[in-house]
Image 1 (cartoon, rainbow, N blue to C red):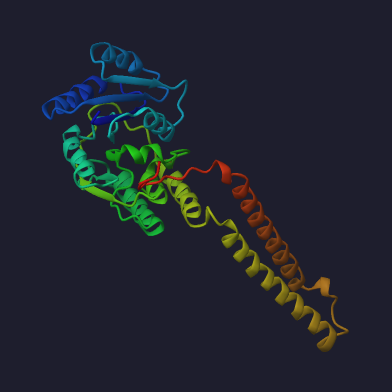
Image 2 (image 1 turned 180 degrees about the horizontal axis):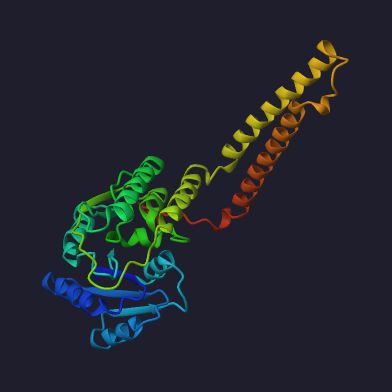
Length: 316
């Protein structure tokens, strides 16, 4: 199979048939073998009924229905697990992503040998203040933090080689950072393509401003995992050393001052430096404990880790 199209959706009954027909037209005109995977993320409208009707008339249509809304990351994870195509294309169900981009994305994966190609909605038909400006700030922070140079991390239209989707774990709300997850897994051939962005034709957006807050929190998480996920003691141990040095410095100052310079002055426990020393030394110990616990957790999970070997030569 050439292409798997994975489409997560929530309450998009108006656009599903039109999107299906558009994708099928592109596939037939380019003679692709394909499957369309609709992932219904707990829709409360007729979305699943429409998917069932499409599956009856087109055997290339497949569907997964969640019991409730679990989020886009979980929907993509389920779609990736079932995808069989050599190239996996993801797109949103709201008709803002253009299926006419699929042939070029497929070519970039199969002929230009990219592992992942991310769409870039260079010209957007969204509100500048509510979407465009926050998106620009978010993408700038993601580039600086992750080291992956993309202009639009959050574009739903992406292409992947099948190997990529089978070796990354999309969880929480990490769908925004799939290129970073792919890079951390060893897939470094990451490209970008300018794609058409279309104004929403039906319904309304399912995402509010909270997605940018959650996005930045997830960015901190993925930064920590990518930098210190394999060596947590390097972060927590360094912080513990810094805090312990500060605490020891204040303790030494208080001791020397009391012994040699001000023996009849205030009690050490009456001075604010004592509480600074006590707090920083306790925090330093807690950082060390956090680092040790992280290292122990990694060691206990060592046997469960999966490693992806790109090629084997003369090995049976």
